[in-house]
Length: 79
Image (cartoon, rainbow, N blue to C red; front, side, top):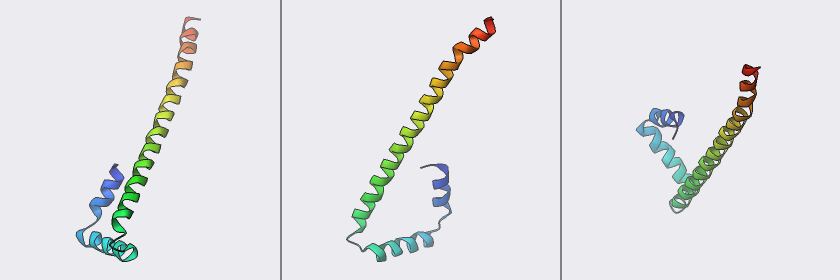
């Protein structure tokens, strides 16, 4: 979890968590909760994987740009 998620969860009191749980229980029913939790968990995992892939691509692209620019800077210094 990132800092923002932790701050949000930390700001929730016990009563708020209970109310949220009861609302979810009423909306989906007790039999659907495990299925719902699995779906949420899988979705969060897929989202995290996509975010990590995106960050990896951005970092790789930035490294490629730096690598391409580095020889030009060295040649300019020697001229």
